Amino acid sequence: MRFIDREEVARRLTYPAAIRLVREAMIALSRGETLQLLRSILRLSPGHAVGTMTGALGADAAFGVKLLSVFQENFARGKPSHQGLVVLFEPESGAPVCALDAGEITAIRTAAATAVATDALARPDAHRLALLGYGEQASTHVRALREVRRFDVITVWGRSPARAEEFARRTERALGVPVRASSSAQEAVAEADVVCTLTAASEPVLLGRWLRPGTHVNLVGSSYLGPVEVDSDLIVASRFIADSREGCLRQGAEFVKAKEAGLIGEDHLVAEIGEVLSGKVPGRRTAGELTVYKSLGHIVQDLATGWALYSQPGELS
Image 1 (tube, rainbow, N blue to C red):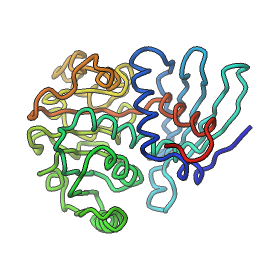
Image 2: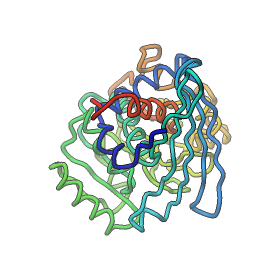
Image 3: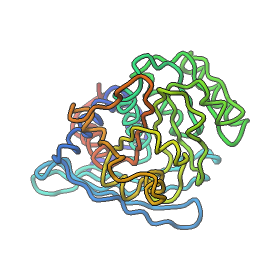
């Protein structure tokens, strides 16, 4: 049984490859070609959780399980906040053949999924990016999103001004793009064309009234029923698209909160992103439309990228 560690995942799973693999997986999921269960999350002490995700790339294709712990304080200690394994089984005999570092796969494939959705839903001329959050996902999202849009300015906000400033300096040096730390979330998104919420916030850090017409928003930070990163006004005003319809209706906190308040119905979730990518449902319809993509992440994204790393030699392209 092979083991692919964090360093090998980071070296071989390029963003162009991850974007391609995740895009294909999203389309397959929405066509009903893949299999998956809703994630199971066991909340431990505050800020700590363990989750399991089970799925298959098809009834007669590779299948597997992701086991992941989330310890939010690890980021401040210089350690990964998401740690675990993706275990792959081959379809012929059902034997386990590979275990991969789940933290690195999760970081890259989540950002790749956001890039896929942004490419499909953001305005073609979008060139100003705002990040709410400066953790691991902020770094991977900048790199993935640059594959689909040319951003000439990036703003970042987080609860620690010092860490936001440090992220801005580090990212600007690495990418050669102006990156500015903002003093408030409202300031960060004021001129943005694309916004990514990448926080561990339990209450809204982004309000719908702060956004300009035509903005595209990626909701990424809240991955289970409970914490919400944005207010219900934003959800109500948006053309709302999710990675998984079933997952969002059951575990998409922002959507569920607005629905339980009687502000929207289930039909407000107009499509899965795979349906947009395949042309079944239109994404953005006008330049002034507010679009939202809700990312919960699903196991077929992990399986698609993990199986490619296992079955293909060298750097993926």
